[in-house]
Amino acid sequence: MDITEYEKLRRLMEVKQLRIPPCVIYTRNGDKLKVFSDDVEATTTLSTPVQERDQWSKGVEFLFSCIALSVGLGNVWRFPFIALENGGGAFLIPYVIVLLLIGRPVYYLEVIVGQFSSRGCIRAFELAPIMKGIAYGQVYSTALATTYYACIMALTLRYLVASFSEVLPWTYCLIEWGSQCVATEASGNGTDLSHGVSAAEFYLTQIVLREPLDLKDGLGSPSWDLVSCLMVTWLIIATILIKGIRSSGKASYFLALFPYVIMLILLIRAVTLPGAWQGISYFLQPQWSQLLNPHVWHAAITQMFFSLAICFGTLVMYASFNDFHKNVHKDVIIITTVDSFTSLLAGCIIFGILGNLAHETNTTNISQVVKGGAGLAFISYPEAIAKFRFLPQLFAVLFFFMLLVLGIGSNIGMASCVINATKDRFTQLPHWLVAIGFSVLGFLCGLVYMTPGGQFVLNLVDFYGCTFIALVLAIAELLTFGWIYGVNRICSDIEFMLNVKTGFYWRICWAIVAPCLMFLVLAYMLVGYEPLTYKGTPYPSEAYVAGWAIWFVGVAQLPLWAIYTIYQQPANTFRNKLKMAMQPTTDWGPRQTELFKAYILYQKRQLEVVQRRSECFFFNNIFG
Image 1 (spheres, rainbow, N blue to C red):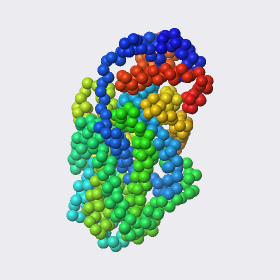
Image 2: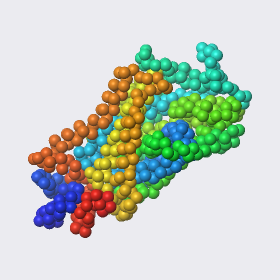
Image 3: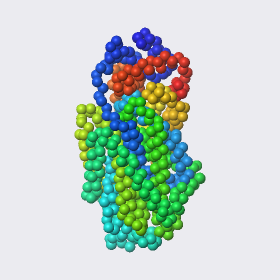
Image 4: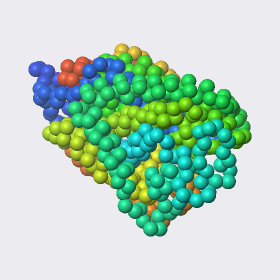
């Protein structure tokens, strides 16, 4: 391709309004590349060796690692309660619809971008440098989530150790709890909780967390037994991370598969308990009127969004270690299906056991024995297990060990995202040093959650630092991939990489359906926003200021990096600087030199058929 031909094609691209990066022209030796744009000319060299990037030892390690990442604590304690709150069995209808319209398409999109570029989540945004602040915000949000997720694992470890006691410590009342405390009876006799508080709840709030009613007296000092559990948690995480993706890939076999062994044991035990089928029926009984409630659809979208861990940077990072030609389409179908199946399975186990608890306590309404969120894992479930007449300690150990393994699998993915983003920026740092440094920093940050007021802080950081930031950046990411880079370019890249055509379903979901639905979720969240509370207790005004500050740091990455990127462009006018900042970088494409050269030739062939395409940018961008 000579310069005359290039100029001819460039003018044609301008007429057609196609967003295609600057053309690249080879010199004779095939190493030097000359890149032409509107008002800048630069030369780059491909002969410099590309830094080697780790790969999964086997393709199946990617599958298991993604399952370990996506199937986590949210599937076990969040999904059952959310489903029950929002229509029971009827909730499965919006959940499946959202899976097909948002969950699966966005999951596939992120995996494709990561595998095609073989770059971490930050460098993957070289496809549209002006938007790389999205990745920095996602890494920031993921780092915050990693710190408090490890603290939930520390709680799980604390309960796991307590489960080896001769008598489960949450089954009896202490004198200082007073007459309001109701002990759990393992004999099967009914206990009335309607006029008291269970020993399991007192054990969590008074013994484990030492939780105050509010934050008037501050957060308090850390609980050293929880600090010890937190240290052990980070030692486990650091041990898995220290050798890089290969060691975490090997660990994924256990982290992904072992929880299902325990789930199977618990399911068999659950369905054989008296009253279990009433609990499962209560969980699955459809409340059809709820389908017209917009809150139900909001809950389905947010549950799917966080359950699959989409738009957090972790999937792009995991996929970047794949073989370039790996057919990930099947993997995405398997992972998203397994995630949804696990949520349903966990719901049947949980409500089978809660049905037994309602039966044993002569409670007609199962909702009275259910506590959402952490209460389901650390109050309702331990209390139900305590009523097992046969080896309750064994089932307590199995349950909390399962939670610990699920938590480690998810935390490994989140921590790997932050570590690899750091390594992409500071390439000279050895992996083991970054892994240990991040683990130490995560442990130190986690100390605040180990204080009596730590759950107040966790709730605040989860909302402002994770949920709220993630929704804003997710919309920006979908618009970047679908519109700035372009769905048509993505489909062209898929065809080059996998030799498959992308159907209308994926195109329309990427370009229109997913970003629109995510925007509606954000709008619904903002319209219905009320000051955050914890167990009905409002926060001090300075806590809200801190929460909004945490949110601002994450979201501000987008405009700040956009301004910096525009300023950095070598063009002469702002218009051309902006245009260049929105185009892929000159080395965007496969990292391997030979594949990159083949990709450039492939782009040339794509340009040669441009005259046969519609002049409508909308059509070109989505259906071309």
